[in-house]
Length: 170
Figure 1: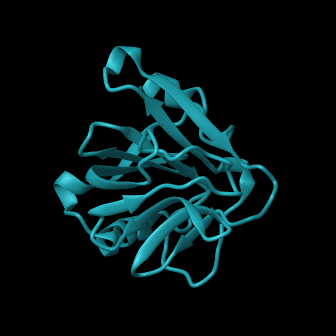
Figure 2: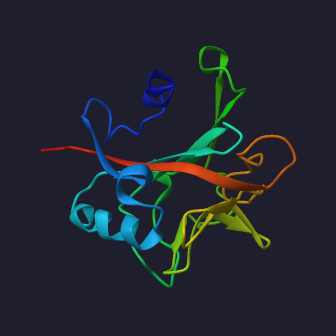
C-alpha cells in the first residue's frame, strides 16, 4: 500500500522520508491531540498524509497541502490535496483509487475543535471525522467528486486507527 500511495505524492514530497506525526494507538483517539502533534509542522512546507482504517478493514484517507490546525475557515491548496481509498480487504489485491481536485470549489480543509473535514459541497463532506476520532463519514463532494471512501454505499464508519505523516524536508 505504501508503494501505491508513494506514486501519488505531490512533487514537493517525493523522495523525502515519511515522518509519523500521529498514531491513534500510541497517542489516543483525540482530534485535539492530533492538532497538538501537528503544531511542530505549522512552519514546514510539508503536505500531510492521513491514513484511516475502519472497523470493517477498509483503508482510506487524504493528502492535504499543509499541517492540520484548528480554523474557522477553509484552508489548503489544490497542489497537494486529494482523497484516496483502497478497494477490497486482502492487502495484496487492493486497488488504489484517488480523487483529485475537480476545480468546482476550494473547500479543501475545514478543521474546527469539534470536527475535521476534507472536501465539501452541497452539504456533503468528502471525509469528516468527529472530535473523538471515533466516528466518521464520507460522502461524494464537489471538491473531489469521490465515492464514499469506506466502500459500498455506507457513508458512515467507525474508526479503528488513524495515522498522520509529514515529509522531512530538512
